[in-house]
Image (cartoon, rainbow, N blue to C red; front, side, top):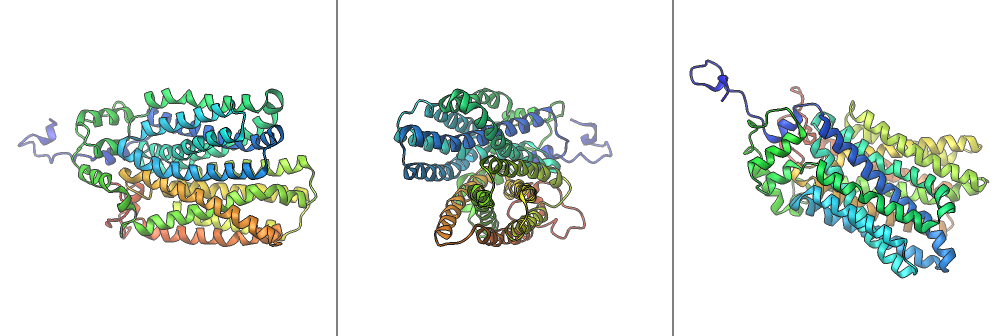
Amino acid sequence: MSLDSLPGSGRAPSPRLSVQEFIDSAPMGPRQRLVALLGVVIMVAEGLDTTMASFVYPHVMREWGTPMSAVTTTVTAGVLSMAAGGAVAGPLADRYGRKSTAAAGIVVFGAATAAMSLATTIELFAVLRVVACAGLGGVAPVVMAIVADSTPAARRAPVVALAFSGVAAGTVAGGLLASTLMPAVGWPAVLALCGLAPLLLVPLVMACVPESVSVLLARGRPAEQVRESLGLLAPGRDVSHVDLTRGRDDEREPLRKVGAILLSRSFAPTTLLVWLCYFLLLGVVFLLINYLPLMAERAGMTASRVGVVVGLFGVGTLCGQLLASFGLGRHDRFRFLALLSGLSALAVCVTAAVGTGHAGTFVLIAVLGTCLGGSMGALQAVGALAYPPALRATGMGWMSGVGRIGTLASGLLGGALIGAGWGISHLLLLMCVPLALTGAAALLLRHEVPPAASGAPAAPSDPDSGRAGPGAEA
């Protein structure tokens, strides 16, 4: 008992912090930085796996005589599997634990990818790829939720964006490894490496990542277990005076009907706007990645320069996501997303309308990748902070699933328009519409999600500081 709380001391007792207030009241410690680093590495593994698989398909077609229709079916089934993986893993993580769900997802995609190296028929290869994609789809949203849960409010948005940048880093690394390793050792060895290496992360996740406190509270775990998890996040700080009763009922309620709450009257506008942003933005990125080579070839570039264009877009995406991590620490995440979406639309228009030489095209593609990459990073922060901790993994998982459907829709639309005689420049100009809608939706989200959604206390002068509503964490 503190002296301040003794009768007759003349001092008012110190206010007891809730669990969320305790996490938010201190700077990041070593364990929190380790969790963020593991998040980056896991995302690198995810980006590497996805990229390597795309480089394997031409070899499979050539060596096994696989028709393009079979590859298209495999890719489509894989995207749908990723969507389902995210939609299922999110609720499982909120109900049974995020650390174990993330570890299971890593095991699934790692083991299935490694097994793909042993496949000798396209049928077995396709089945294993669908299984791997289910694990990939489930890992990303759960890991983003873990990183957000472990990070203080003041750093939450930039750290989430930084962790997500691992996907772009893995994509760039995958392109480099595919061009150097596959000719030397063959695609089966590369797939085995990409599958087995992530499995080494599982013991680190289980040993080093504390279970999310919101999940422990929602499951009614003993106070000692909750305080142990808090102590891992903030070593050296006294956790004995944290009030575990504040917010416990609020955490348990979403657990019982998480899906209904996300689509309830109070949360539905936030959920639908987040889904719209991710559907549109991921669709645009997917469409550009698919048609950049064709655009470069029609501009008269050689095969090597086409590779440079694709590589520059990937590097630009990584730079943009790192820029988002830096900018989100200083600027409103909704306005940041709207600004970058608008700049992406402008870059697309310039790329489509301005006739430049090869050097000018390289610059435009790098700028476009940077703007879109920054938008993706900012959107991850918006999605991760839009819901209270007990709903976060489900919200992120469903957002990811809707985004995957967006990639399929954009691919079908792009193919139909190209088949109808649309030129690449017209297709690029059409992309301005979803990018403009993404920016508008981001600004609408700013009014739907109150300041407390980020976990940060609202400024005293903020008229919304006293609002309760969707996304409030504390």
